[in-house]
Length: 454
Image (tube, rainbow, N blue to C red; front, side, top):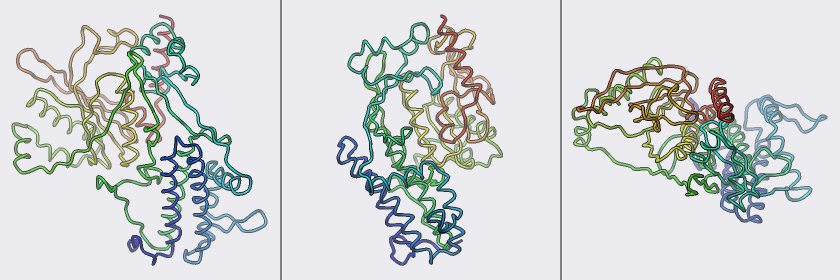
């Protein structure tokens, strides 16, 4: 273990590097605050790019403090001077980092970046990006009737009109970097240089302090976040507006943090009449996620049998241990499409390697459903207690117990299935860098193909 990095201390040999990285973070937030002010945004973004680029310049000026600097980082200037070390090779191979170098040179030598603000419009009607999803030119905002004409007929169109969401999003994009929103590009580049600076401290023998969220006191896994700060993830939400196509209403959601210190009486009351002790379940040792899912589902069964209901909750795990839990409240399918995309950001922020969603659900055999019909709309539906677990590396795990409400409320036996299609967790897979299984995509495409002919 290296010694702890002295916080806010000028005794650190890389103090100037740390400050320049912090300056970039502050400028990034200035650009975020000025998103709807073109001149203010342009100034802050360009200052952020120039300041971020200076991190490596200052690091090289302090090369004497870092052992084996030329091999670790490099002393490359041009083809005739110097040689790239491990970090220079890595940064040079990254197209975004090369763009940052070129952008800084253009700002200093040629003038402003050619950034343009535009509105992106799309219709979302699936958990999958490969599902029913329509890109809409911004000019169609002038007339809702024109917008609706772009929705295809048939079962796909009916599904989109009923469950689709119109998402409008303001974006700044630079001409030479068309695939990135500008703030996101800088945040990603910031993360890459944050990793470099952390590695520089390790090279010296210092251990940078663990980052703690000021408001909630939660610790975050920087590598899992691409070395960005939590505030740099999902920063597009304030400039995004969602509308339900069914009635045109604005869809909004919020996260509320409730801090409550449980008293001994609270704990006793919660544990009352439970067959399973939640403390043993949540802090038990598990060899694999199937064991964990089965153990937790036994706890969920116990809570349901006592209360005769179970609220919808999302549990996040890291190394088989719970790190966060949230109650999820949604009123309809469009809201769930959006909230599952938003919850995927929590996976990134917390460094979770597994997630489990539990709640009551309507169940129906696929053969009894029409195209795009939800189990809740089927006359032969059945109610179930259900928990779905997905993880960074393993297959999805589904636990189901059918609910009987005829007379006394009871649960049938638990069924545990592995390897199914957990469509609603598609964006969790993206957060982990996992490809969406081909079987999920093929199923969605097949349904859409059949629906277009109906």
